[in-house]
Structures are given as C-alpha cells and as structure tokens.
Length: 116
Length: 115
Image (cartoon, rainbow over all chains, first blue to last red; front, top):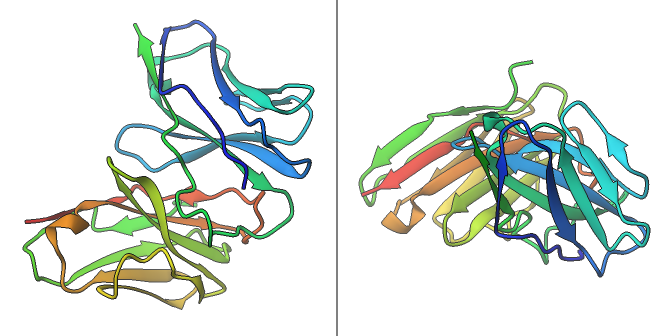
C-alpha cells in the first residue's frame, strides 16, 4: 500500500477550524483515503474516508486535492474533546486488506493539541 | 450496540505467568483483529480472523502468543509465558468484512503490564 506523510504534531485554538494535512504522493487510482483518530486512553475510531470528491459527515470534512496526492481533514470548530492522534491511511478499494507486507497499519499520525 | 468489548481493561502480572485477553466483537461483524500498541512501534496488527477462521497470524511476535475465535462472538489472545517486553496496550477491533473500505471498530483496549 502507498505510504502517507503527516506532521508529527499540530496546535489549534478551541472553537477555531483545524486543517490536518496528509501527503500521499504515490497514491494509486483505486486507493481510498481513510482517517481515524485515537483519543487519549481509547482505541482508534473512524472519522471519514473518500476516493476523489470532497466528503462531509457529522464529525469532519475531507478535502482531496485534484491530483489526489494530498488531502486535508477539516474539523470545522475544534473542541477540547478533539485533542487526539489523527491517522491518515490508504487502502485499495474493494480489495481485502492485505496485511502481509504492512503490519503497521497506523503510522505515527498527527498529535493534535487544542488550546483553551 | 455496545461496541467491541474487551476484558480485562487492565492486567498486571508477573513474568512467566499466563495471560488471557478477551474480546467480544460487534454483533454481525465477520472480521476480527488483534492489535498491539507500544510507544516504540505504534499500532501493530498481530492476527486477524474472518468468519472465525484465522487468516493471517504472521504478525504474532512469537510462539508464546496464540489467538482463538471459537465462535462469532468471542475471541481470546493468550500469552504464555508472559515477559516484561509484552507490556503494551492490546486492542481488539471488528469490521463487517475484510474489504479495505470496511470500517474497523476498536475496543477500549487492555493495558497489560508484565513485571
């Protein structure tokens, strides 16, 4: 699977929008972009995923560059409860997970700090 | 639904003892995953099942680790004998199927400390 690059950490003020970037320059045409987040002392949780078009759900928006080599997770109004590690991962659409060559599914992610 | 349930939430044991971690996946999910998270290596996939059958256990670190899924609603991860380097948070996750677009739902984890 293609790799992703994310900043190690970011800071944002409470009640302001947050833009979390992810670079995936080797993405293939069939790769979905998934975002998960891990709140302190919890397991990762799904946030959003998309293929080509921008996506919105109740948690966040996903903006995908036209060439698909990068994407941005947007939290429209950050709260203290959004402080977490955010993971951007790529998965080939429609195919079973192939874990044989990629046991570390979730990389380091971006640690988001929210300032009150 | 209650989500993925793991027990115990915390386990402290001494080196050499047997440890059994338990997981109940979300009802109706056909796939189950065991992960281990440490500061050094992040979140590693250990083994996964589909329809109760182990598909790939190549992530299991050593023969001391074993996992079973006797039915669709229960799985165990056993470490025998345990060692201090096994100290980590162990997560169980389930998904509807193994398609890469299927969302994985994680449990709260079991924090294992081996003294």
